[in-house]
Length: 48
Image 1 (cartoon, rainbow, N blue to C red):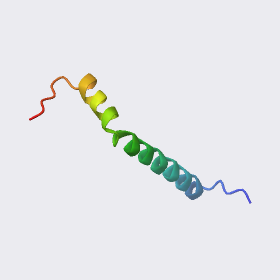
Image 2 (cartoon, rainbow, N blue to C red):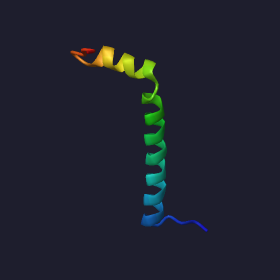
Image 3 (cartoon, rainbow, N blue to C red):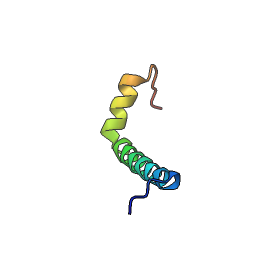
């Protein structure tokens, strides 16, 4: 059965967004990645 209803499409999109969000969170939980982003993308970063 092919379910191309608006609700079905919205559920698929929500699932894809949730997977994307989880992957981004896993990536940003790596300290080396976050440190590189902070070093190269922030104008001023001060450790206290």
